[in-house]
Image (cartoon, rainbow, N blue to C red; front, top):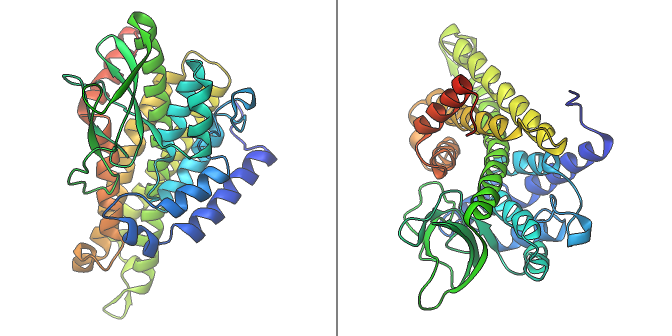
Length: 339
């Protein structure tokens, strides 16, 4: 296994790092916080091929893989981008796999925001769909049917992670329901997309963990107490070192899962589950530590620590109860079964 990035992959990472640094600074994130969506940023990302980055060129995409998507998502996480990069990219790939070329073209171009719902619907409603308050269509599993539900964006819920989350009905008045697959095929396509979403979300969390840690380290080097930087105190050095190891581990397990996916290994879904569980946990802990290092300032809206903590917790909960996921991973490891 060689996780060293190719020259083309390094170019992708560097290009999107520059874009997010320029088009998703803290000021832009705060301006888009209420809506959870930055239309100008979305236009730039779509123009660069981010939505179709994991879609084959024959289907209108960029022809990359999930290593490339992970690199984009990692930079998006670093900058708390108010754009559903992962949900839209996973939906586009799913639609391409289902043979919906007409919808894929609009989705990849960014003209129509189409997102994936990472949890099965309940009573015909996809709950707390990330970007559900801005998407024109949602791909979701409704019982034994995989559906594309098109309609007006949902009503934004109180969303502390500024993900534009909303409940989306998958049928009824004002909703155009298109069945993509039924039965076993529907479940197979949805599970594959869910695992790909976990992979992309893990990368975003790895980016958040790394950036929250960098913010904490910078502050610890600047803040003086008793005439010395607070970063010189062992009480802070130890947790910062622990957070650094967790953040590095998050990046490693995520890129390994993406590598396994792109090389067609059967182990990639389990690797994606572990990557998401660990990276989401690392992001929350890194953000909590960042807030702790800032002391009372960390709780104020003027500092960015609270932004990272809110986003990290929201992403971690987007897939449901994190403890249940760890239990599923453990059970699968003990029995050799599938997640």
